[in-house]
Image (cartoon, rainbow, N blue to C red):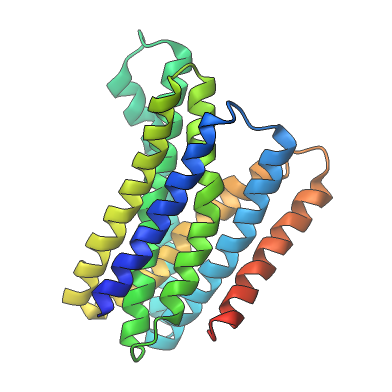
Length: 251
């Protein structure tokens, strides 16, 4: 039953990403102001979700594990984020057209971002199970991530299309980023069920990874807009929306 809940959660985030990616058939690029509002709202949603995962890690295992997991997740994702562009450059070579190279780097970056998000879904459901079987935390994290996966799917596919990739291929790349997230959720959950003591570490790690994404990418991108106060308001609305969803499901 626990795996079924996780599977449904993983399907939810995959469907959300695919739905967003399908928007590329209607839009080829995103206005910079709309982009700022989207990423700011997503940043607020993910910030609340990250806070809740960190809190659950603290409840389950105390200060040291929660803080250590948070730091490991943040530093690990910082390292991956810094190494990924260099790895892509080595793979694609200098002869690849610059716009296509940028598209490859963009897809790779967003896709690697989805690994900790999928793992966050896994650790949240595993953590809910370890806390007594309530799926509330799992669904809170799932819906928080799904909310930001809808615009993220479009954010993946639309710029890729703008770089000159065929629309259907751009859509496929957006869906692929969701497939990676789905796989990370399934494999992460199975791993944590076998090694349940790792669950609080996974919660802390996922909280750290998501915090890195929010602070290093989503919010800075949003604040580059001309009207920063509007972007800040969107972030607060996102945080409040995630809080409201948590209250709605009784978390």
